Amino acid sequence: MASSASSVQQQFSPLTNPCDRKKCEWLCLLSPSGPVCTCPNNYVADNGTCVERPPPTLSPFSPPSGPCTIRCQNGGSCFLNARQQAKCRCQPSYSGERCEINHCRDYCKNGGTCTASHTGSPTCRCLQGFTGPNCNLHTCQNYCTNGGNCSVTVGNQATCTCPVEYQGDQCQYTKCEGFCENGGTCLQTSNGTRLCQCVSRYRGVSCELDKCQYCGDGKCLTSSSGVVSCSCPNGQTQPSCYSCLDFCINGQCSVDPRSLLPQCRCPTGWAGYRCHVTAAPVDSSPTGSTASIVIPVLLLLLLALLVVGGILWYKKRMRGAKGFQHHRMTNGAMNVEIGNPAYKIYEGEPDDDAGELLDSDFALDPDKPTNFTNPVYATLYMGAHNSRTSLASTDEKKELLSAADDDMSDPLA
Image 1 (spheres, rainbow, N blue to C red):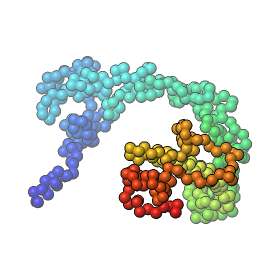
Image 2: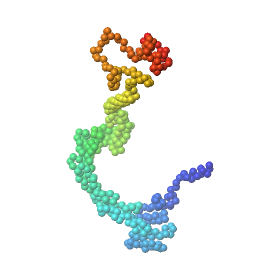
Image 3: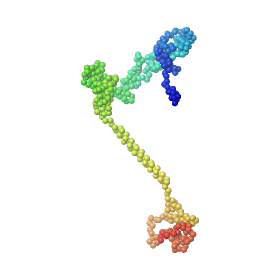
Image 4: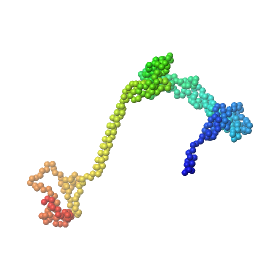
């Protein structure tokens, strides 16, 4: 257990900073190749020590000094490192084993001037009218909107001259009326949002609030430039005579960092710059209208499901039901048929001896017998008691009735 615990501790031991082993005089930076010492401007790192950068030579090649055996280009100088290896110390924006790589070559566009930063990377100083990291962009490119004319200032800043109906630093606003109060200028964005540009004495979403109201019991002062301040009872002149301790009546107070005026965040049911006005209740009709639409739709869906289910159940029941069918009754080899002639007419089996349906004006003849018994049945069974020619005494009776039925009493007796 002890060996496993020690292996776990070694596996999850905290990583060390490679710069801790690198003795740098000024600053150590981590690079993919390892820790590198850096120095401020006009100094270079020499074995961890920042030494003054030597001035560039006029010749593109510098002869080696001392035991150096390599030639450095572009003003680089040869020196021996800690391992007594000859290396080149390059000028800013140059690199390589012989300082042969010029990072400023073709780096800046449109006449820009390339210089090396304190880290050695190239930077561009662009001519007027151009901008970007390589001076590859026009300063006025896509800056002004809505047909505004762009011009460049001495500091290479773009400014817009807007048409009459547009305003803003990029002509992005249109004029609107009837929204801003107290002389404020209404600005409307492309998506319809309206903003107000208030004069110095007023503030608020629609310039509805007079800054003199912040003076309370003090005196409101307006300078020649229009700046409003308060001469407060405590003898001091300040933007407001109120503090967050006594400003908000029903809300949470904070101080605007730009105007240094207290401002309130009102809870539900209160409004006004001091949360002192009862707010109108929020209309909940959208929620009610949504419910009035959703509930009928759900009921209609439920009704449709019930109708479909009923239809499916009815079809399934009809498939399982069996209709009445007529079958001729036979008894072995005798082929005795006892059928209903009237039913056979509906069944579609024509028979010459089946007879026809009764006419609608049919009536019984009082002089004729009204016994409609089956003569075959009567001859076979009912006449067995008093007829010698009955089938009751023949083998034919055995085929029609079983032995258990011999004792059956006459149903017509």
